[in-house]
Image (cartoon, rainbow, N blue to C red; front, side, top):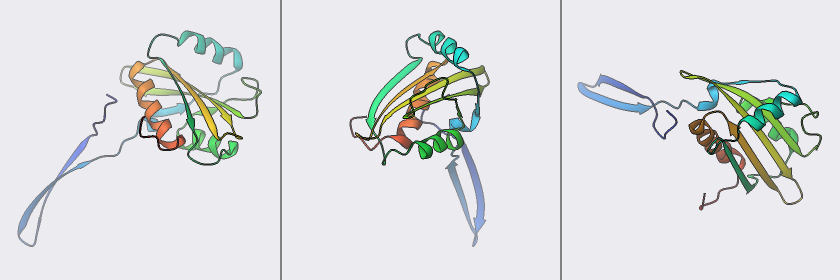
Length: 155
């Protein structure tokens, strides 16, 4: 369900006496089905430990797409990606962002945990993503990297 395929809409119409048929890809993004999940530190770390099977975690270290600004990245994670930004009791480092969300699929809820460890001096980010669905982990990773990481042809 998370491949590079999109739903298609087929449109047929007549213009100036000619029949036209078009197939258009509908841009439906996975994060639109993600709801913020506000949890405390013990719950976060309990989920974090449970989500340790192969494929449930992806970790990437990359150069940020722009100068690291924690409030702007937090806004992107919370409003753009629909994660809940968790309080400093989960991670007290002011340069880190920890977030959680629940992705709702036909097969049931998928718990999604995100940790962004930033190094503003080097303009680098270590992103660790864990979810309860291997395919969701890979798909969310791709979306997050697209918006947070500087272009890298090897990725």
